[in-house]
Each structure stands twice: as structure tokens, then as C-alpha cells.
Amino acid sequence: MSNIALSIRDLKIRYGAIEAVKGVSIDVEEGSAIAIVGANGAGKSSIIRAISGLVPASSGSIEFFGENITRYPAEKITTLGLSQSPEGRQIFPLMTVEENLQVGAFCLKNKKQVAENFEKAYSYFPILKERRKQIAGTMSGGELQMLAIARALMSSPKVILFDEPSLGLAPLIVQEMFRVIKEIKDAGTTIVLVEQNAVQSLKTVDYGYVMAQGTIKMQGPARELLKDSAVLDAYLGVKS
Image 1 (cartoon, rainbow, N blue to C red):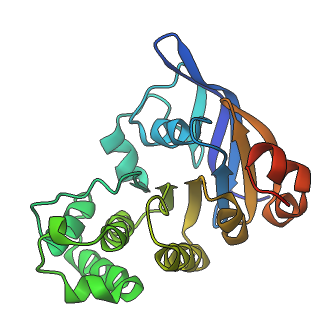
Image 2 (cartoon, helix red, strand yellow):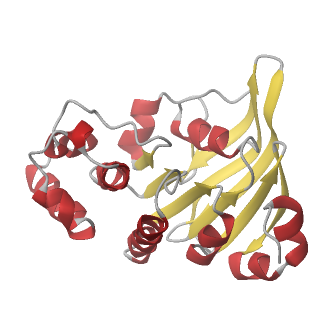
């Protein structure tokens, strides 16, 4: 029997009178990569924030390796082995690259593990090692996204949530981001990817969930969804 890293059941999220997520259920197997794709406003990022403990669930449940984390605060969820590379990067602009990465390792007490994680992060993004003493706010958008992903790796997570990692980036940088995300998955980390770039996302992951208006409209193996012209046309704005 496969080990389920994340299990979401009938999740609902409200912002005042608006129900942004309307009863979503998702399973993520350990070691797999899944994508939640759809247009802006579909409810994708709300799910990521609820998993991270950043927004409350109105109802439903979220389990992390069998432990119900639905009402846990964000800092406790991080210590369990779940990290996020957030939409908009949200790095600390007045701190150096190295200091930003150190923040990502705040829950680790083992100095050897922290040092190993620095090397792992730099192996994915060598330019960050070159710029480790640079003030983060002076870097380009692509470099900041690299830093956000590298920071998410610093806590030795079992699961990483990626929220719109390609947003606002040049096409070549986008390709690089998805290549690294696949490498992280291939190294054994479970991936949950939220993206408007549906086609590239589905090429990177094992399984996909297509969202519109707060609900899951379609799900299945990523390769099968990519072949479904009706899905691409109706929900993802891609003309087949």
C-alpha cells in the first residue's frame, strides 16, 4: 500500500461571504509530484495556504502523513517537514542571500545538516553561491525565485509546496525552474505545484488536478490530461 503524504478531504475555504474553495479532496503519495492547475482565481493558492496554515479552513480536513494538521499554526507545520516556496517569492530584501537561506533552516538544530542543506541548495542554483553575500533585494526576478526555492529546501522538508514559481519570469528562466523542480522530486521530495502555466506543469508532474471556480473539474495522470483537448480548451485556456 502506498504511503500518503498529504490527504485533503472536502476542504472549504471562505473569505467573508466568498467561498473560494468548495469541497476539494486531494491525495498526494509520498515521493510523487502533483500539480493543481487552472486560471487565476480558481482557488489554487488558497489550498496551498491552507495546507501551510496561513489561512483557516472553513471545514474539511488536511492530514500530513496521517496527522491532522487542519488547525495547526504555520510554524508547527513547518517543523513537521512541510515547506513552501510562496507566490511572489517573499524573500527578505535587506538580508543577504546566505541570511535568507539561514532563515529557511530555522527549525533545524543540527549544524552539520544545515551545512549540507546549504550545499544542496547551491548545487541546484550555483549562482546563489556566487551571490551569497549579496543583498537579496538587488537581485533579478529569476534569481529571487531561485532563492525562494532554495530557502524552501533548507529545512530538509518531506513535502515542498510551490505556489506559482514561474509567475513573471522569462521563458528560459521558467524552463530552468521546472527542471529544478523535477530534480527535487527525483531526489525523493514530495512536490505539490500550483501553477497557471498548466502545460509545463503537467509535463513536470505525475498527476494533475484541474480547478475552476473553487472546485476540481478534472483529475488524472498528467500525461492523460495533456492529451485531453477538451480539458485544455475548456479549463486551461490552451487551444489544442
